[in-house]
Image 1 (tube, rainbow, N blue to C red):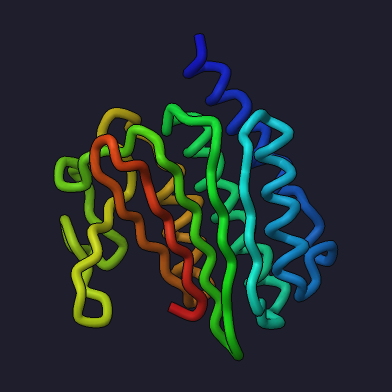
Image 2 (image 1 turned 45 degrees about the horizontal axis):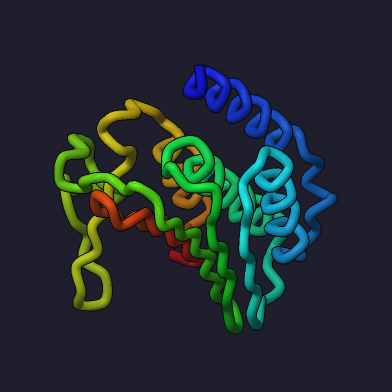
Length: 178
């Protein structure tokens, strides 16, 4: 019953975001992210959001980052087993990083059974450190992170990283440019 309700609400939220007029977001990434936070809160998720030194970005980038963040927040609401998420957006001249974190149930990255965003099956190197990356928790069989996060970010020259472990929550990091 709860899973069906989450699926219906997720579909509704995706339709709302995808039908949004691109001009509403202009180049203001904060406004686009605040809209994502409001949409998640309207569906019952409590979100603590922090914004620091956000750069001006093209409207397409603001919209893409907001849509990817919306999907990450929706995943918290439907899968994390917690009613609270943290969204942080930071940047400097020409770079933007949006992070969505929860302290929910998490999932085993190694057993996800799908390839990561670079085509590797378990980890992606990033700046000398290894960042675990996977598309979906194995129990869900969903496509949200694949289509709504990784593909969107790649489409605008960005990057998405996911880190999780059972009992340790999930961290989704969106970077532009990648």
